[in-house]
Image (cartoon, rainbow, N blue to C red; front, top):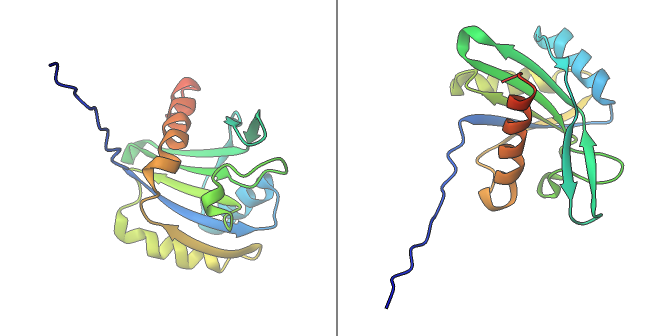
Length: 152
């Protein structure tokens, strides 16, 4: 009898995520972050994701700051769209601030503290190791989106 092999992929996350709750529009949120945290987030092509619940593709605003000296980047990704949430598991987050390879892990609490002081941001919270089953595909597709647009 043939032996069945099972491929198990354990996605290792090399990024950190902060959820942001705010009533601000995406361009205003990027402006607030740029102004308050001395970032340089620039709007790039929207991230398009097929939502099975409504059976259509939804476009989510995406802003990016590349940090070449650290080989990393920071993304501001919209979670709440009038048609559907990108990741319903985090319905309290209107946006995700995603740090890839930057900053060091010990700097995240400083960012969190600064974010909470920004007028227009109701709350900010760390999303520690999102469940792979529900989010891995989204973050893999986001990475591909950034590579396809030569922004990664």
